[in-house]
Length: 117
Image (cartoon, rainbow, N blue to C red; front, side, top):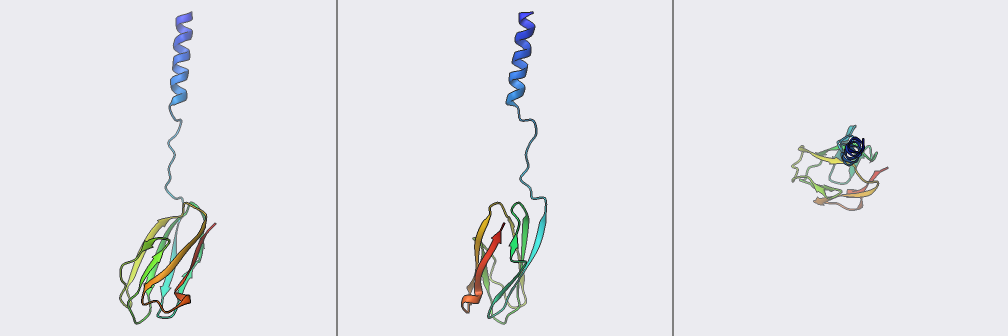
């Protein structure tokens, strides 16, 4: 009887150490965020996203000069006029994340904040 009880206790202890399910960090929703970079300003639609989402920032240069953009630390390549690039991110943390044009920036309208709520 004591041997059976000891085996049952050992199995219960081993089962407690094994995780019951594997957690995944893949986003359940992926949204496309359209970003238009002109020679004078940046327009981002929508300007915010929900925590846990995946985000594809579709950056399109609609100006006449080449531009390069940084969104929350992620950068595009140098975009010639009419070119586009996709920057993929997982919105893991809430907060305000800066974006800015780093090549041929014209002023304060070439930077802003992307909000994760």
